[in-house]
Image (tube, rainbow, N blue to C red):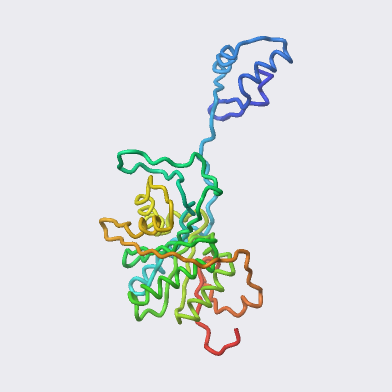
Length: 313
């Protein structure tokens, strides 16, 4: 056992142990260092007597949650309730998994006579393009909207998708609403850190549309509680399960055909704008934004108000 002691991991409390080395390497080391020849089955039997067996990693550990996690969830619930009570728009936004266009494997089993043949590897070089679905879920009306981008997932793309939703649908559903509530994840193109996200909200929604925008971000690691995940994206995944996404038309048709018995309907559009990555916002530009941080978790909650026309920005 002294040969493998330094290779053994285990649980001190239960006494269970397991080995990091392979049986072949232990067999070779015994021959070279000890002059002992044993078969691998004998080595396995001896290790089992010591309660040592092959073990894979087990996902049991949970990182320490953010101290303001529960506080933020309660605050989001209050904001959401207030907006819905006032009849103002409350939308949940996020980018769905990017999809390669072509005969690529798509998890699921549709009813069919014969299975579709797809590529054995998901190499991007095989793709005819890439689809970036940015979703918008109307919490009040149980309606979904997806803007499919073709270039990059950037803050500009995210805000353009929201502008498309508002101009085509939102302004008709909420003609008198002075304010918009956006529920977003803590990271990604619409995360709480990117300055460009806030700058684009200011320019394209607050200033251009005259809407006051309040944003509440979910804490890190809590994106699965964002309503869009289980109200819209999960239903979309079921719709195109097992179907190779061979073109933008296939994706748009699948999105538009997504429905549920509770009344969900989805609208979709293709965004042909090419978005540049790596754009930044200077400190001076940030100072010109009309951002009001909330008293509760100010990094995650803020309101952006329209700037007066004719002001220097």
